Image 1 (cartoon, helix red, strand yellow):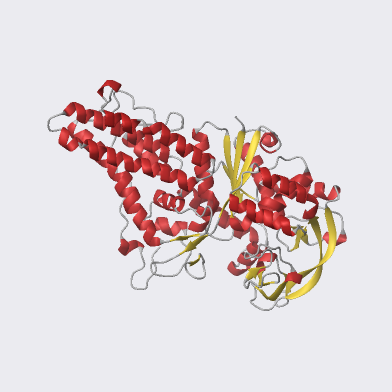
Image 2: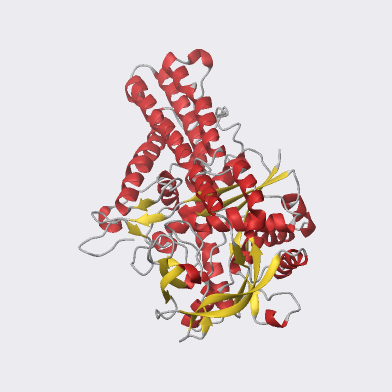
Length: 563
C-alpha cells in the first residue's frame, strides 16, 4: 500500500477562519484522512499558514503591526479554530517561520532559472499612485476584457476563466485606496506556462479530478497558456535569489512559494516527529507515495496548471495524484436571497463565534458535509443547520442511542446482552446483513472523494436502525418475551457500535462519545467496523449526544442577525 500525503490549501494568515473555509477544503480533507487512517494507510495531513504577500502587508498597516506579527497572530488563531473542529493536521507550519521554507523556495526558483525556464521581461502592471505601490493581481477590480464581466480580480475572470492582465481589463480600481489604478512598467521573471501545456494536459487526463474541474482546466488549455510572472514588487516575502541589479526589491510571487509550503511543512513534520527531514523524498519523490491536494475553487488554476508546470520544470518531484476542488459556500438568511459569504456584508459565520455561542462542532461538520459544494456553489442557511441538527442528529442518531442504552440498563442491566446466530429472527438477520453493504458503499464513496454521498449512506443506515427497533418493539416484547427483547437490544447495541465507526471520519467527537457509552476504545480499524460487541461488556455512562438548537438563539430575530 502506497504512502499518502494529503494537503489542504494554505490559508492567508490575515484573518479568522469562517464556515466557508472549513467547508472548502479543511473538512473534506480531514474526513478523507481520518478514513484512510482507519484503513491502515500511512497517511499524513499537511497544512500551514500562507504568510507572504501584499494581503499580509496591508493587514499589518491597518492594525499597526509588522507583517510577521500579523502572520504569527492569525496563524495561531487559525490553528486553534481548526483544532476546535477536530481538523487533525499532522503538521501546521507557516511559510514565514518554517525553518526550511525560504531555502527550499529559493532553491526551487534557482533550479528553474538555471534550466532557462525563467525569463526576465519588462511588463505593465497596475499601480496605485496615492499609495505609491504596485498592485498585485487580487488588489485590483475591473471589467474583464474578454467577456465584459464587472468586478473581476486582476488575476483571473471568475466568469469566463481567462487569465487577466493590464491589456485585458478596463475600469480598473485599486482595492487598497478605492481610486482608479494607473499602469506602470516594471521588471519581473516569468514562467512560460505554454512550454508545459502538453504536460499539464496529460496530467489532467489521468489525475483524480471531479468532472467540473477537469472541464474547467481543459477549457483553459483550449484557450492556450501564457507566461506568468513569478516575482513581485513588495518588501514582504522571499527575496529573489539571483545576482541581478533589477532583482533588488523583488520577492517570489506568493503563489510560487505557497505550494512549496506543502513540501517545507513535510520537512517540518518529520523534524517534529524526530525523523530525518531528508525522508521527505519518500513522500515527494517516490513512486511509493501519492499526493492529493484539497482546495477551494479559486485556487484551481494555481494547483492544476501553475503548480503542475512548476513541478515538471523542476523535474525531481512526483506530480500529485489528484486535486479535489470544492466550490464556494454562499450565505442565505431565512427569506432572503443567496449571496456571497462576506465579512463586510456581515454574512461570514466565524468558527470561533459559532463555538462561543454554544454550537456543537460536529453539528457544523455534519451540516457542511451534507450540503458540501462538491459540484456547485451551495448556501449556508442558519435555519437548515438548525433543522439538520434537530432532526438528523438529535432525533435520528441521538434518540436511537439514548433509548437503546437507557432501555437496556433499565430492563437488562449494566452488562450488554449478546446474541447467537440461532437466536436471530429473519428480521434480525435481514438488518444485520446490511452492515457489510453499508460499509462497502460508504468506503466506495469516500475513496471517490464523494463525501456528501458517503455521509448520506451512513444516515440511511442510522434511519434503518430506528426502523428496525420500531419493528421489533422491545417495549412490547419485554412484557412477555425477554429472550427476544435481549436479542433486539444486543443487535441494536451492535448497530450503535457500527454506526459510531462509520461516523468516525465525519463526526469524531460524537463517535468517541458513542464509543465511550459502550465502553469501547475509539475505532481505528475500518475493516472491523462491523465487528460484534465482546461478551461481558459493561455499558458506560449515557450522555446526550446532541442538544436541540433553539430558533430564538440561532436564527435572526427582529432584524438582529444570529450566528
